[in-house]
Structures are given as structure tokens and as C-alpha cells.
Amino acid sequence: MQVVAPAYGFLFVAILLFVAVLASKTSGRLGVPALIFFLLIGWAFGPHALDVFRLDDLSWLRQVGIVALSLILFSGGLDTNLSAVRPVIWRSVSLATVGVLVTAGVTAVAAYFLLPVSPAQAFLMGSIVSSTDAAAVFSVLRSKNMELKYRLRPMLEFESGSNDPMALLLTTVSIAWLMGEHASPGIIAFHLVLQLVIGAGAGLLLGWLTLKLVNRVTLQYEGLFSVLILSIVLFTYAFTELVYGNGLLAVYILGIVLGNKPFMHKQSSMKFFDGMAWVMQILIFVSLGIILNPSSVFQYTLPGLLLALALIFVARPMGVFVSLSPFKGIKLRSKLFVIWGGLKGAAPLVFALYPILAFEEGTANNEGAYAFLNIVYFIVLLSVLLQGTTLTELAKRLHLAIPMGEKTFYPLALEQRQNFRSLLQEIELPEGCHASGKTLIELNLPTDVLIVLISRGDQFIMPNGATQLLESDKILVMATTPADLRGVYEKLEIPVPEVH
Image 1 (cartoon, rainbow, N blue to C red):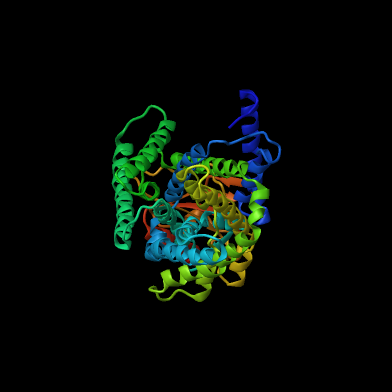
Image 2: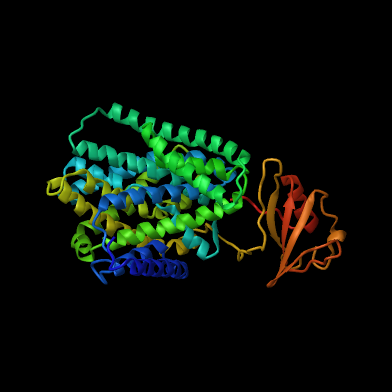
């Protein structure tokens, strides 16, 4: 990255981050995933527009991209609710493995007939664009205060977090094929499975060890716990890669293990890594936008358009239907939404850098790799603009959308510990609620339940037994068991919400 002076560099980085944050807010209102704005910001400051930044070393960008993907996946793992995912976990695993393989294969067939490429090059293209970025889906849905029925959200979230490793494995196999390394399909399949198994095992083992360490170590400053976990995330990726496992899968599972168990300063760590994930997304997309050359991208408009249409309307549907065929009871409309929710994001753009760096400059394969990068750019842009802007409307038309109330941000944080576990839930009193006008003492709530706060309009009330509840109040309830929590709903005479 080249700038005139360090001070100017800091100034422009600050401006980039500030503009990117504003863009993310605007993108939600417009129904467009934020990554499209990040790419455009990078292009605007890059050598093909304002020429403020230049990125000449793509190997550096690939390394940054892998670190960014690792932290994004780890943060996604921390936010994954295993109890919500467990009923649909095998569907997600099938989508992330069989679905990715089928999508890559069908896209490769399309690439072979649409582009002047060899079978190996066609499979490389299919592998690069085979993974999805469901995180972009939920950034749009959250901005519209929308939830999904039939556990579609946890299924897609788990798929998005676990399909990047499979796509990366297929990409590296394709590059090895192009470089003349021959192996039987059985050996290739064995190595693919082995890397996934080692990655999953490393994530589980290091997650368990991390919980033991974090809950026993004593540090003087709370912020150091997040730094400690950051070092473990980086170690997990590096260690897993050194023992020939899949590092991306390992860090994602590490995040799931930590996110579903109590540990010291969990809330502050989750906020830290949520911020890190946003910084990484901004960094990677802005960096990729800097090397974006619109004239080169749109040079491949026709093949890129045809391949994108084949991927969206043929390859992804086949991948979804084949991978979900063993599972009964999945409605057609759910499958249609899963198909349309297969947005492309950061991973394909990062994976597209691998063949560029694998082949020597000036060779046919290297020149083809640059063409592939531009085609992948076009596919990602079209996917985001076409699918990302219509997801909300599709969810409504398929009757899969569940309106959500506006989220309340309470002025407190609950730290979970091993010797203290509780359930914290917000309950909104509807119009005509039986509890409206009654005091907490009159409701006779379960003994092991505590009403922590009441949100009323723009005020927060610390309640006592004489506090009177009103319609539209949002009460923050702490309970020790699910049965106690259900008892609160019964006393309030409010139906217990269904888990979708």
C-alpha cells in the first residue's frame, strides 16, 4: 500500500473506515449487503479512480484475506446457537459438503462450454465460486427486522460458516491438477475427508482446552482476555494447517465451542470479535475493491453473465436439491429460499487470488487466473445486486418471514460463569394483556425468576414488587430453568413463542 506520507495514510484509513461504517448503515436501509459498498469504496480510492491507494503485492492480500476469513468465521461461530442448529445440523453439513461439491461440478460443466478453458480450469472456476455468504443474507434481514420460519436461519448460518473450508479444499485440488499433480479420485477424496476431520478435531480439542485455560487464568485487565482468545484463534488456524487439517473449519468450530459454553468475560469478548469481524470485512472488501479494474471486469460481461446465471439458476438449485434430498419434510418454498440465499461474498474473491499466485507470471495459466478473478468479480457483483436486493421480498412472498419487534439495547451486560447459569429473555406485553395494570407482587411469578429491567418507551425502570406493568412494556426476565421461564409466560397469560 503506497501513500504520500504516513500522516496521509492514517488520515485516509480513518476516512475509509468512517465511510465504510456509514455505508453499512445505508446498505441495510436500501436492502443491499454492505460488501457492495465496501468494494465501491475501495475502487474509488484505488488506482483506477482517485489513485490514493495501491496494492501491488497480491500475496500480502491473500494472507490478509485468509486471516480476515478466519476471524470472520470465528466470530460467526461465537454467535452460533448450537441448540438452534442441532435439529438441522446434518442438513447444514450436507449443504456445506455435498451441496458445495455438486455446485462446483455443475458450474464447472457450464464453464467448460461457456469459456475457452480446459476441464481442469473449468473445475477450478466452479470450485472458486461454490461457497456462499449467508452472513450477507442476515444483514439484510436484520435491517428489515425479519426472522425466518422452519429454522432456516440457523441452517443457512451454519452452512455459510462451514462451506468455505470445502470450497478452499476444492480450489487447492484444482490448482494441483493444473500444475500436473495427478492422483486418483479415491486418494483425492480421502485427503479431502482427512483435512475436514483433522480440522473439526483440532477445533473441538483446542476449544475445550481454551475453555479450561480462560476459566482458570487470572489476568489483571479484562481486555487481555480478548487478546488471549485472539492469540488462540490465530494459533488454531496455523497449528491445524501445519498438521494438514483445514484451518478455516477449525477456527469456526473453535468459535462454536466457546460460544455455547460460559467463560470469563464472554460478553466483552463477543463484542470485541464482532467488531474485529466488521473491521476484517471492511479491510478485505476495500482491499479487493482497490485492485478492481472496472474495464477489465466488464470486458468479461457476457461470459460472466452467462456463468453467473448458470450458477444461480442451475448449479445452486441442483446443489440444494441433491444435498437436501435425504431429508424429509423440507418444504419446497424453504428450498427455494435456500437457493436464492446462496449469495457470493468474500470467500470467492479471496480464493480467486490463489491461482494468480500459484502460477508463474507470463504463463497461460497465470493469464487465465487474472481472467478468472475478473469473472469472479462480475459474478459476486451480480449475485449481490440480484439476490441481495430481493431476499426480503422473496421471504414475504414465500410466507417464510416473521416480523420482529425493534431490538431493545439494555444498559447492562450479563457475564456467564461456570458456577452461574441463567436464561435472560425479553418479553413484550401485547395489547389487552392480562398482566396490564397489575403489580409484580400480584402476578405471583415463579420464585426463581427475577425481573431485571422494564423498558417503557424511552425509559428504563428498575422494578420492585409494587411496580405496575402496562401494555407494550418490555420486561427483561432472568430465570434459572426453561420451566421457570415458561412459568412467567403462564402467569402473564402470554403464549410461549415458537422456536423456528
